[in-house]
Length: 275
Ligand code: ARG
Image (tube, rainbow, N blue to C red):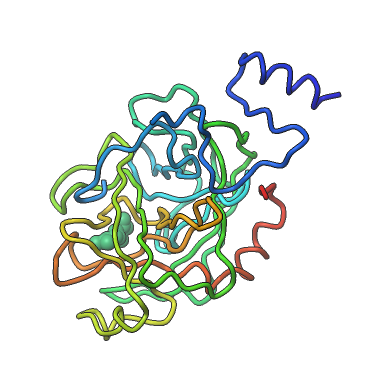
C-alpha cells in the first residue's frame, strides 16, 4: 500500500523521490532526470551528477568529504575524525553549491568507526578509512544515491578516475562553494611505488595524478571513483594525503577501498543499500 501511494506521489512529481517501486535502487547511477547534460584544476559538476557525495562540516566550516555507501553510512577518511568531536559535525547530502540548500538533507552523526590500524606520521596516514553513521537515514531519490563498492582486492591501475569535492582550489585559497570534479589517472601499484613518495607508501594506498589536477585541503574523505563497464560508478579510493596540492613531483594518495571490503560490510550492516 505504501508503495502504491509512494509511486503515485512520485509519478505526479509532487516530491523529489524516484519511483523505485518494484525495482531496487541502483548504486553508482546518477538520475538521468536531473543530470542534464575543488579540487585544484577542477570544473563545476552538473547538478547532482555525483549524488553519493556528502560534505562533512565541523561547526560552520567545511571539514572533509565523504560518500554514502548506505542510507545511513558515510565512507570517509580516518584522519577526518581522529582527535575530533563528532557532536559538532554535520553531514550534508544532496548538495551542489553550498549557498543553495534547497533539497539538501542535513544529519548529525551517532557514531564513527576509524580503522583499528589507522596510523599517522607527519607526511602520511595509513589505513586512512572511517565509517560515519548518521543519526537517521537519508532518503534515496534523484539527488541522493549511494556509490557502489568495488570487489574485494579489485585493482584500478591505469583507469581514469574522477575526484569530487568542495576543497581548496590551491594551497592558499579558500574552499570552493561549488562542487568541483576533476579527472586523473590512477597509477599502477608499481608506478605508485616508483614515484617520489615511495618511502611513505603502503599497499593500502593508490596514487593518482594529472597535470595541474589534485585534491587539496577539504577534499579529504571524498571519493575517487571510476566508471565501471557495467555502467555504474564504483569507489576506488578515498582522498587521503598529498605533499602540497597539484605539485607535479608528487601524485595524490588515496586509500585503496578494495582492501577493506569485509571491514566496510561488517560496519554498514544496519544500513539500506542498493543493487
Ligand atoms: N589531507 C588533506 C585534507 O585533509 C587533503 C588530501 C589531498 N591532498 C592532495 N594533495 N591530494 O583535506
